[in-house]
Image: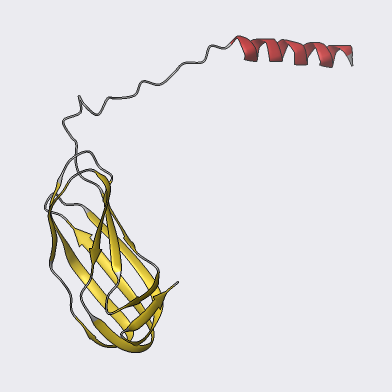
Length: 139
């Protein structure tokens, strides 16, 4: 038993004496590969006619010509209008809010949105909801 305790103490002492090294972190200011990174989020809640979309640029460069590359509904939607260009430029930082155009329907639906920019960034979101005429709810 004394041998086992002695071996454990030696292992603990060797483990404690091993130096811990920190990894180097590259500074983004010196990195020439800065680029925009988009995130998109369909806003939940009750509303009329249209719904909100939050778009974040979490990258470290401005995104140009941010637009819907794809926006489609599945379910009981009778009419919807897909906008094209959202923002000519979207700087890094807090989210930008955009309201879509009108849509009309009855029953359950799913909306899928894909947003792109000229720099090649792509972001998408999908939500389920229920619609009665111009009133809708996305949980």
